[in-house]
Image (cartoon, rainbow, N blue to C red):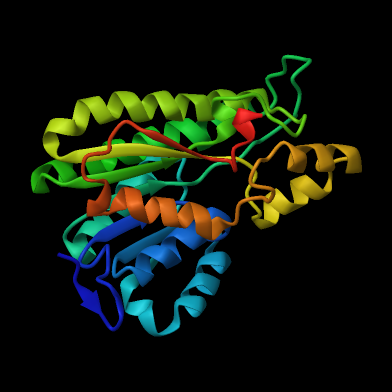
Length: 265
């Protein structure tokens, strides 16, 4: 039976508590907002406090559902302190969204370089593992948890924009394998672990990357995307809501490709 509240389906994340990393902008911001709209209480993490304060203003009347934390997702002590803070405030952690990430250093697929390797792997992969490690115990105790890792289609396929950051691709590929292995390890504890692998998303950074491409390459990238447009952050947020909700209760170890079908071209 489907319950209805004020003409819509009941809130998918009511009474849940989630942590969203990299929540100051782009995909993470959209996920934090979507979770709050679905009834969750959200700890929004970002290294940029100003972006979190802006998010708090946008949330407005629902700010009681939001806790902002200026946190470094690559520092283990900061990660543990954040988890302790959420537990002390709300007494539970039901959802973790590992969203923070990005490429650091030279974009090159023709020359092997080490510029930015350690920092990129730490930001995209090591921090992801450390956050899962930090929330595993509270999730085990309550026999419930949802982990959603934001990877990239670039972690499975070669970039279709012609700009490949080897460290970024390797780290995001690592996130996909981490998702599968941790899903296996935590399944009997009632914890599901899944990944989303977006293609080009029209965040501020994604739009800038696209606009920097040569006109002919921009045309080709769009032509090779069967749906004919590029993803908006809200579309990734909708997938995250699904994976964090009871609708995905029997889904674990999976990767959802959200790239408009360009991997089929």
